[in-house]
Length: 618
Image (cartoon, rainbow, N blue to C red; front, side, top):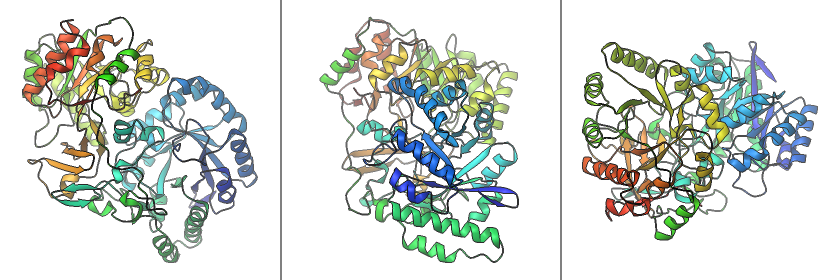
């Protein structure tokens, strides 16, 4: 372990397999992270990851070298994984790594119940991006947070000054253009989830915009070799190098270069030299390099167009994957889906709709839906719902429940603004019945404040234990992950967990801070469309400046809406025309009222209304 001015500094290195580990542990790192052959986010490449015996040997070898070890248990877990989870956690507790890195709240929950004697670290896939989330994780026994890739060093410093948490920050390596655990692109196209370690990297495909081909979603690698002092000053404890899928010689050399600069700085913080190592890193880069979000939203300077950034492996020139069209629902798909949900008809009792403007509100109320969610992530050029809008809606909504759907990501300013806004609405006699909460920080903030809380799909709830974790925090109903395969979704719905299922909508597959409208110099009065061999993709920017890549087709479970063991189903209506929304609502109500079967429901939407099952595969 290194120290500078009494601040602990840990250079954290990746190891893809045991053979690589044996060289990594001899390098200038202070700690190594690696994964077993299950429940781990790097599952797509053969010959990588550790057997249980190798995990044990690695921990022992690192201990001899006085180095820390962190084992990744950072996947989203299905029901089969849950059956083996306790035994695996107890095995890890027995071999005693320094800690484990987790994404799924089920792992955090079970680790606490088992009272493990090792540290628990929140993975970058938890997308920790606000102080409320950090406090919530502190209260649940988390020792360290790997901050969201979009966190600036200024924000990291604020978090450090206002909590007791340790912080880990990416220092070098492959970055994603989308926010952590908020990309469903690979899952929707291939059934290969980036949130479960099997991403096929469609973000690194080429796209055409107005006849010009480029790689607008392919970001550069991060390199902070010149900015290590700023990271120390911001209160970062662990300096994380990404690269569990990299080859041994490259990654060992890279670690030693970073270790050398840290040592030079500790010895001589004024006269130290990093230029020679920076030059080596530049010369041996796999993609071009940037400081990503460390000093603010980077914009076009973060987009890469050479080497692996073009979607090809540097060594072979082969593509990770090729542009692929979203699958269209065919009759045999419906038959398969019908077979999975083979239970007696259990009609949902309530229909919810997420809306983004007053025209959609009017239609939803005219059609008598049970609940409306007022979207906060409204797509430009439309404007957010105002105080006056909410007061007007509360006067005319009748028995329909009114919820505010909070932004998918929330910073400290937004927490303050929404707090003031909701209080003013209440003081003016408006009634907001509940909130659609999108992150753990929002759950902590609003639980017990008199609002019904529904957990949104951005929480990535994959299993019963994770669902019950959120219920224990004050959420009353959860929305299952849109990536759940049909059989896993059925198992969750048939449990005791109260659920609301998204049954229809043109969902956002990628959610990112990279401003694609600005990148293409396009006004949001126009429609930004990227096109490749897989089809045309509409891009929307929301009022908070986040870009959304929308599905080409509508995700739907409407054909089995009359077979879901669930109290409530939801239509995601953002980007729907008023007429289309009315038709979609009526199709849902016809199924709920047993006027038509779910299997016949899609016919009422017309042949031009293209639908897909997305990640809900078999």
